[in-house]
Length: 418
Image (cartoon, rainbow, N blue to C red; front, side, top):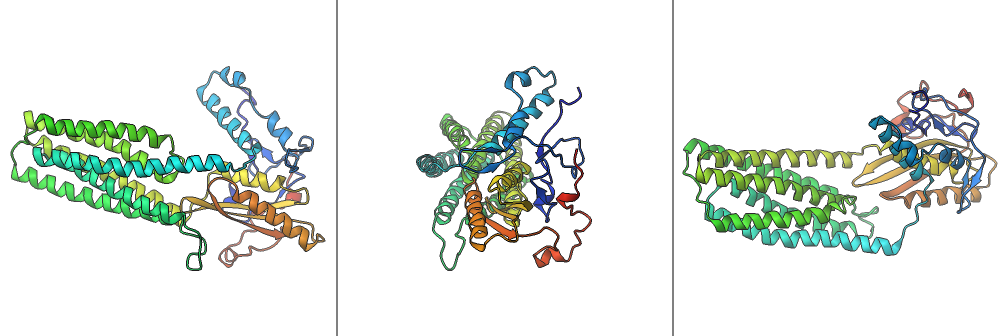
């Protein structure tokens, strides 16, 4: 099916995440097809369109023309093709959208996030008490493992609560960019604690298997306590999952989902051990502990990457590149577009090329307004806009100056057109 699988992305999108990318020139088409070479840019873009906020945008007509209709997508036979064009439509819609922060909506969203965090802490206090009672009454290692997990849930909620409060405080002399990254650090600390707890549970369960302890005595009351915990976790998971775009609440949603499986498995193992084979209880405790260990070790690794600094999603790089190119008609080229994680948010760096004869005041206003626009994007903590008058130069930063980039730099004027 020739021509069906054409995905249009920003030229040089992947290069600009790591190095000074090929300059993106207005004389070349912003889009390329998926099957074309990454270094080939196409000319002959659509007519210039100025959108509602007077932003210079010569590409909006072209983007809209590439958007597939819903009926057209539904008519495609292959599921992968349908998914492909749905994702392409989402990218086009995102590129053409204008982000304007709604203060009222933001307040409501922050209130819902607080309800999720504070509510999880309050519910976990109650559930810890119920499961502690169930573990003492039944003397089951599987239920003890679920109780330990509930205790760590409670501890995690408290850690996230303090981290969330600290991250909202204003910047000061000691912390010039604020404390937003303390939330990520708190999650890593908690993940390490959970992993250590899981290892301790495994040790206890292995000792129980060696000593061949008696069957746990499981009465209806402990079963009811664990069942109540399961029901509460279902409600918490549904609520937190609806706010999963927030990293802290997403962590809570993942935790509640894991608890549903852990508590169900632990209760099932305890019931079977009390009525059949005794070793099912410690074996179940080992399985529960391994699940906890795997889940939180993975969480620690993911958030450690966020602190180290991982490049943003290609679609996000596309967005900042598009915003830079269409921000002002006096921007001649875009030399670099880079975004990387600093905690849960992004730092954005862009290099734009202006006329060398442009007045300092005008150049400053262009750069500052672009910076403010980029910082208005969701999850952008800080944006840095560098102004330049040409693209043929060595990397400005010393770290990159030791690496030769001549083999991968392409001047926009030398790019072949179609």
